[in-house]
Length: 110
Image (tube, rainbow, N blue to C red):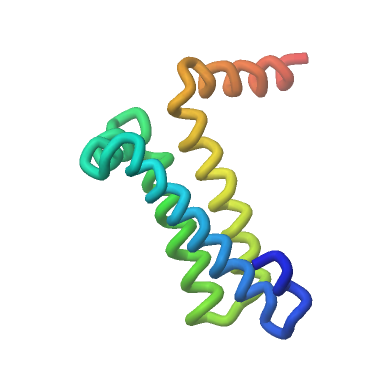
C-alpha cells in the first residue's frame, strides 16, 4: 500500500491496504491461540476498550477511504488505528501499560 501513495487516490489505497494488513495480522494470531481463545482474550475486561477502539478505527479508516473518499481523514484514522493497535498489543506484555503510564506521568511531574 505504501508504494501506491504516489498514484491518484493513493492515500485511499494505502489506508485500505493498511487496515486489511492489520486485520490479517490479528487473524494470524488465531493460529497461535485458536480463534475462540483469541476472541476471549480480545474481549477480556483488561483489553475491552483497546479492542473496541482498534476495531472502531479500522472501520472508520475503511469508511473514510472507500465511502467518504476523504484521504486526509483516512490517514488520521490510520494513525489512530496504529496507536490503538499498539496499546492493544502491549496489553499482552505484563506491566507494560503500567510502565508506560508511569513514564508519562513522571515526565509531566518534572
